[in-house]
Amino acid sequence: MKAIITDAGFASRYLPITKTIPKAMIPIGAKPVMQLCVEECAKAGIDEIIIVATPNTKSREIYEDYFHNPANNVKALLDKQGKSERFESVEEVLRFPKVTVIEQDPTLPYGNGSPIVSAKEFVKDDEAFVVLYSDDLILGEGDVKMLIETYRANPNAKAVIAAQEMPEAVWNKYGMIALKENGTLSHIVEKPKTPDLSPSNLTSYGRYLLTPEVFDYLLPSNTGLDNELWTVDAITKLAEHGDVIVARSKGKWITTGDPKNYFMAHLEYVLSESDYAEDVKTLVNNYKKEES
Image (cartoon, rainbow, N blue to C red):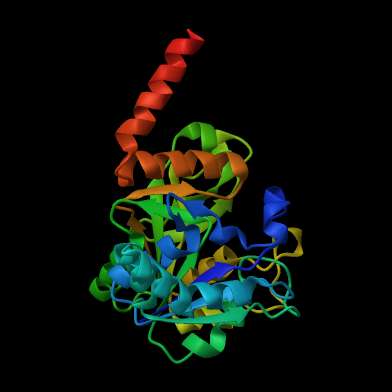
């Protein structure tokens, strides 16, 4: 199994920092967002990870350096200072499954489907492959393992998509899932303007297991809303020709798509995953006391 992780955008809401580094290299805790996505793949047994970087930027160079540079000079200095244990986190990165970094094809239309098309040659002969949008993080048990297990239990499926129940107040911000009578995907309603237009309380987000048949529909000529190439449009086409399994996440989906959500995601991650969560809780409680 292979995985495609997409980070092929200019992230204008994060400027000026994204003028210099890709958004997925912004840290959550002590690790960049991209590393957390790679870790989710590694824990699920993925053999190769293809990162799709923004073209005509330094993004590819930055990812190559992060995942492949052995940083021997740093190791030598830490060894000399008697702080060798601090280098263990770097060695962990260097032990990840094979990481291949490519740039998105700049001739493709704008849209979240274009990074997947750009990586087609790496996955076209695979039985199935996983796609992760690096905007989306999963707290707790990752979705990649769940997607693979679901596909193995349903080997004739055209695809498997992750889903999570969301409160009505945010249905207008996401793709909401419509189900067939058998519980598989019918279609996805993008950002319904009113709650009554949402077919369910299930949200689709950036965790998919796709079969190569998706490339029959993920074509540069098949642009949709706002003339963008949408992955969900191709997935909906797959659902017209077979079962697309909707699998409920066992973790908690959080998004880093904009600075506000990034901060909230960072806080949730620290409170659930870090060894200094209690210190942060104390700080917040003290702040609340001062405010009152």
